[in-house]
Length: 171
Image 1 (tube, rainbow, N blue to C red):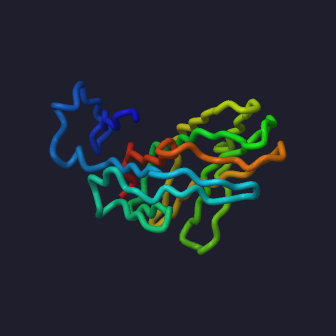
Image 2: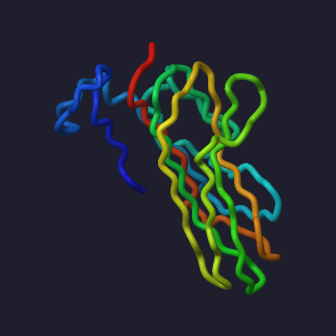
Image 3: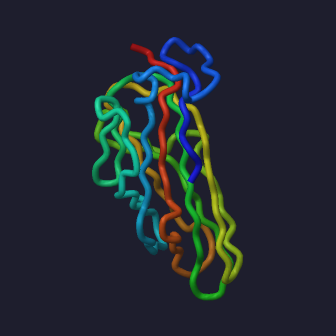
């Protein structure tokens, strides 16, 4: 797990060290992870049911594998997962961030699809880091689908993570 460090304050002033952050600047990070593995063949929402840290509950809410963001701004999202495929065959998985802009419908966020090649009987990992402009009450989740191969795809326990950091506040 990589540490989450806020390097700019709300006025976008560069801060030289985490020790120099004001108390309010330490409140912009969220991270959740999956404690167990899960298997799938079709499209699935990856289970990230364990919140590791939420320094700002007035900005972030997390429930049922969905991160809701209450404050508009530019956020840096990061998501990661490791996979394996059963059956001794190679395959591929697509992993992507889905967004619901407070409409009740999730769609794939453009530019977030990551393809992972899974060699036969070996593990493979992916990671995506992307800045996004977020509106009020936008919701996010990680989804995946097997795009080739015939075996069951499984996530590896404690490797699926989602984090968000507020970079710039639009309010």
